[in-house]
Amino acid sequence: MKMTFLGTSAGSPTAERNVSSIALDLLDERHAVWLFDCGEATQMQMRKAKISLAKLEMIFLTHLHGDHLFGLPGVLTTRSLMNNQSPLTLIAPKGIKQFIETVISISYSWLTYPLNIIELEQDGVVFEDDSFCVEAKLLAHRVPCFGYRIVEKDHIASLDIDKLRQDHIPVGSHYADLKKGKIVRLDDGRSINGYDYLGQQKPGKKLAILGDTTPCEASVVLAKDVDILVHEATQEDALADKAFVRGHSTTIQAANIAKQAGAKKLIITHISPRYSQRDNQKLLNECKTVFMNTDIAVDLATFEI
Image (cartoon, rainbow, N blue to C red):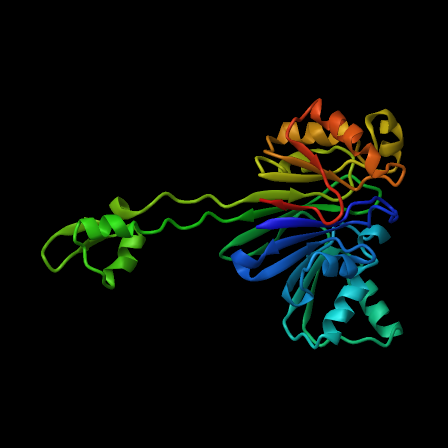
């Protein structure tokens, strides 16, 4: 599992940063890619990062401000121009269905695949299957804005084949029962406890990708004990008042959320256009005064989870 930042600027693109979008590479886990936010030129950034639209399975939008949304029509319609037939699920705050229907209609575009639109109006689990669970919570921004907690379910413990061989336990249909921890009786009369031959259960990964927000309790809950927290840090600490008025957080505030939540790593993004890449170290140093294991996202940077 890895995460690529396709855009890291707040509000508008700059010469160095595109606007918000993150691709979550789940090719090893489910042969798919998930997208979080879709600012303008997202599909161009995907091309640069060699991320295939054909593998796109789900899109999660935090909110409907343009810098998180305006790349969506291009992504959806280009996917159709590729004659892609695989279903796509779009999860976003209420209003997204009207936006998509309007854009498709007045641009005389079309979709060649089923598009399942889920509109968010309240907190809750928005996706769950045998391998992943995604929970959304309303944050504190100027418009309805959600953060997402993505949890990979623990991997089922595998059988210790070497130990089975050492104990001369033959291969057979009873392996399925042993893997479930059941007791089986072999043809030679021995009773075998499956738990004695199971390796350690491997815990799944946890991450939180938050939308625009001032510091709030929902952010702490979503980020509880995650491997990676992605949090906006639109302004430096000296501009805390400006950040608050516009519904944003500062470097220090993002770091405090990571610390309160017990996150293992913080990545800050959604950087104001007032800052160039030359300011990255200054912003990063502010975070590290509170939470040492912090990184700052730059466009096309990839992080292993």
